[in-house]
Length: 129
Length: 129
DNA sequence: CTAAAGCTTCCAGTACAGGGGAAGGTCAAG
DNA sequence: CTTGACCTTCCCCTGTACTGGAAGCTTTAG
Image: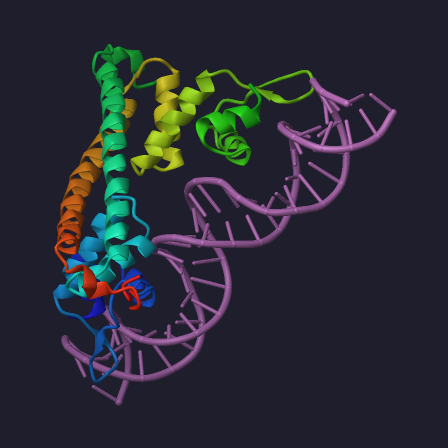
């Protein structure tokens, strides 16, 4: 698969994929005789993982650490366990805060639901946006 | 309350608070006769909200939009409702991805747990970090 | 054979969220 | 009445995660 196809499939850009390779998030791609990067679908899985990590608020550096662990198939020492524990604690905190915020926003949204429609007539500029 | 106290209480810095004021996330603070910013505890609540928003992966611009809605006490038009819906959809997606990632990491961490301790002896550099 | 689309590297620029530090004003303690 | 802690504005710098664009090579279609 060429870089353009992969980017499309992964919902990103060729620029970003080269950037990820540069940052060590993707292994240096195989090359065709012409010098083009040549990917397998494995890369797609990897990019999805990166996207999930980002959605969780991890930095690319943190994602790379986790990928390195995954790449070696097994986690062989305390440092690695500690790293994963730190990430998990981090993520659990984020999950709690996210639930909190969701509730707050849902409350606001609920107020919006029960407002008279003509409170914001079409010829009135909505100053809240 | 002066800016230093507030920063301390909110777990942030004076720099950041002035930056938030500049960006419209905090209303321009009252001033003492000497020109110092003078805050009430209300600001603390607001900063906590901002922090929760950030933990949820919202940008400061998005947080500001939500705060603007909150500030006017009521959500008066479709645009606002749509904005909140967009944020909620956004957050629900993040919550799902976060759960996913948590499972993945917990799996890895579990492997780490069941590894022989001496696989990573003290005189062996842990190459995974 | 040529044109267009897609790829290569390289360098520079952008947006976001702040942080550093200068130059100077304010306030409470001694 | 001075010293030190804290405050003010202003301007520039930093790190993260990309993005744009130039100059040139490769591949596919007509």
